[in-house]
Length: 197
Image 1 (cartoon, rainbow, N blue to C red):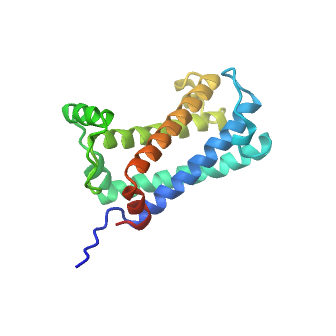
Image 2 (cartoon, helix red, strand yellow):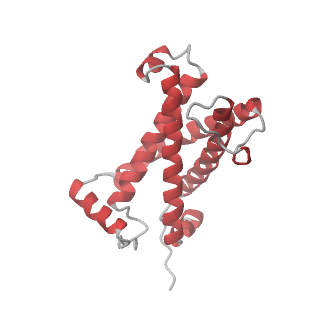
């Protein structure tokens, strides 16, 4: 007898893959935008960027921005209404987190149950939600600086918002790399995100 257990509902799987596409488009088009006015003393190789030129990169960036913002809002609302955010991501205990972190760094963190997130996963998912929020808010300052003067001031001005935006992008990129590494180590998690069970 074959029993199928649903780990990821369809709304979550669609949301996950839309976020992945949106973030990759945002990152690669953002690198092209950065290259138009680099402020960190280096440039991104054009082969890694999207848009071809500044105007094209901005069009890709804004299209993906709307997708990420709408999809992120749908994720949060669906997660709150369904109770999934609270059930899967909370609470985080310091002692349990340190124990799971030690196990993860030594390659001994168990990941047998796909329906349960360990403390490291919980912290990572909450951190990336916060990171994406910072990315959106700093992006608003870059896009409509005059229309969001309070937000611009809270972020330390336009130039500081650029740096915050770039660092938030780097944080999202680091999460993506770690996420891909963990998926490679536990490939059945990818199957669960594709099939839901």
